[in-house]
Image (cartoon, rainbow, N blue to C red; front, side, top):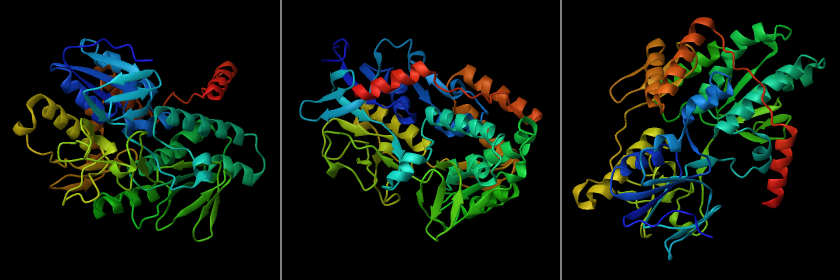
Length: 434
């Protein structure tokens, strides 16, 4: 069975993955004389930097998601298909998807990364990742459901398991989640759950390295740790988690923490694709590419964004897995297709800086020529993220939401939305068929 896409006189570019890199490439290449096919398991683009705000009931999922079809509705040479990539046949220049087969002239892999549990199956089974809107909604439901259950739980240890939360990983995601949870404890719990003693709620941030925000400056790391501790977060550095059984988090030093919820933000790894031999990947499962994002020793196959490892003297382990790299590689590859290899320079990443927020009026920003924190850094963080969101409606909604939250210290999105019995049965039957 083949995917129903009409034949065209132009070259067909198939993009697998509609993240920052895939969308940046598609938006630019669709203006040229190509047939573009965008394949993703969802029908929308997700703005990953704000997943944590959905999880903390600060934003609705629709505010950080944008439908692909709306994005390309005026481009008749762009075809969207909701499917999963199953296999690549490099000899026949064809991919096998959950919808059928599809030939390509050029194949671009921009599938991003998955959560890295470092081979621990029990942690993978019990911890909660933060890699999709679905993960964020699940976490939101779990937090609010456990607060409700804690109201009727008399046993102290059992109640601590319901209300205490451990975040593993001190990168931007871990730091931002910890800050948001601390603010929820400070501003929301006393109003919504006045029967609970908010002083009983403990938020732990566990980091295996000797500092937070390892990819940022010493100033940013120290400031983030100071902000979190001021908010009441218990930060543990040089502490490695060895296991989590759903009830206790176990550390390498022998200590353990009672909790029913562990948010895993400790690392990512690439997604290996059937049909592409292991020799084309680096140790992190990222496809090794040349200076123009072409997978080395493979014809007409490219990788961009988090899925790509472009090794150089400056970046011996590949570029950092951040949005700016993905956006710049997507635009570079579009220029490569439209202008030709001879007319463009090799890809050179322009580091525009990095940032992380630790709650209201608290953020850290590392720019190429200056580093700062506090209120001004928070304003910069707000502006950059608001500017990066797709869609005018989403920008306006998020801006108004942030303004309302800033002055009222409150949100009205704390809804527990669980799947119905029928939808659970449908999902179960689907999993059985698979």
